[in-house]
Amino acid sequence: MFDIQEIRSQFSILNQQVNGKPLVYLDNAATSQKPNSVLEVWNQYYTEFNANVHRGIHTLSQLATEEMELSRRKIQKFINAEHDFEVIFTKGTTEGINLIAYILTQKLKKDDEIIISYLEHHSNIVPWQLLCERTGAKLRVIPIDENGVLQLDYLDEFLSEKTKVVSVNQVSNALGIVNPIEEIIAKTRANSDAYIVIDGAQSAPHFKIDVQALDCDFFVFSGHKMYAPMGTGILYGKQAVLEDLPPFHGGGEMIAVCSFDRTTYAGLPFKYEAGTPNVGGNIALGAAVDFINKVGHENIQNHENALLQYAQKHLLEIEGLKVYGENANRTGVVSFNLIGMGISSDVGMILDKMGVAVRTGHHCTQPIMDFFDIAGTVRASFAVYNTFEEIDLLVEGVKKAQRMLS
Ligand SMILES: Cc1ncc(COP(=O)(O)O)c(CNc2co[nH]c2=O)c1O
Image (cartoon, rainbow, N blue to C red; front, side, top):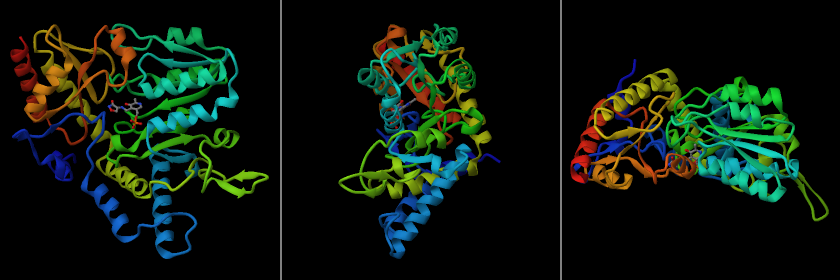
C-alpha cells in the first residue's frame, strides 16, 4: 500500500513555508531530502557510539565498525553485488569516477580509446579527459538525436581493440533520459575488452540495481540523491577487476604492512578506503537503503512515473513551452524552457518566490546545452514524496512566469 501522506510525514523539512508559500521541493536530481529514520541513525551514531573504525579495541569503536560493515552488506544486497568487499564507500559519484579513471592510468597507452556519451554529467567527462592527458588516449563521444536519444550506431562504429573504457550514465540528470545500458554493455563485451563503467547517480534513487545482471565492471552512485546524507556514495567494482588494479589514495586503513623499504596493501574494500571514513554518513546510507526497500522500488517507480507523465502533460498545455526529450524513455526529470521568454533562471526565480524549488542552468551538462543551442533549462526532478498537487503548483507557477516574462 502506497500512502503518500505517511511517506511525507517522514520528511519534516517538507512542512515549511518558503517566501510565505508551502515548500514544493522539485530539485531531487541535485539532492533529495532525508527521512527522519536516516537522520535518527545519523544522530544516534554521534550521540551514542561515535568512534573511529576497524582498529579500535574499545567497545564504541567495535560498535561503530559493526554498524558500518552492516551498512556495507545492506548496500551489497541493494545492488546485488556478489561480495560486500566489492562495495567501496566514497563521498559521491564524482569521487567514484575519478578513482576509477586514476587507477586505470597504467592500463592505457597512447591512441587507446575511451567512449562516453553526449548525455554525460561533467563528472563523467572531465576525469576521462584527464586520463587522456595522462596517457595519450583519445575520447570518443556517442552523439544524441534531436530527442536526446543516444545514437548507438556510433557505438558499433567506435568499438574496437583500441577501446579500453566505456563509461555512460544509466539516466541523464539533465533530461531524465533512460539509456539502454544493457545493450551498450552487450555490444561492448562482444566487440572489445574494455572496462565498463556505469554512472548510476540518477538511477540508483529510482531503479532496482543489479550489478551482476548488468555485468558492468564498475557502478557508481551518490548517497545524497537517494535519501542519505551529503558526502556519501558507493563505488561497486568487480572483485577480479579491483584486485588487479593499484590503490587510489595512500594512507591509513589501506596498508597491510608499511615500511620505508616497501609497503603492501590491504585487501578489498580497504585498499580503496584510505583514511578515516565518513562513518556516520555511511551508516546512515544503510538506513536510506532500508527506507527505499520499505517503500518498495515498484511503488517508487510507479509513483514517480505517474508524476512525470502528469507534469509533462500539463506543462505541454502551456503554449510556447518546450520539453527536451519529450518523446524519449525518461524517469525522474522534466526539463523545459519557455521559448523566447527570458532565460531559465528567470523562470526559476519566479517559481522560487512561489515556494517552488527547481534547478535552472546547464546542470553540469554543457555539451547537451550546446547541442540544443541553449544556455540552460528549467529542470523539475521528482522523488517519492512529491505529489500531484505540487505539480499543479509548478504548472501554475510556470504560467505566472510566462505572464510576467511576456
Ligand atoms: C548523472 C550524474 N553523474 C554524476 C553526478 C555527480 O554527483 P556528485 O558527485 O554527488 O555531485 C551527478 C550530480 N548531478 C547533479 C548535482 O546537482 N544537480 C545535478 O543534476 C549526476 O547527476
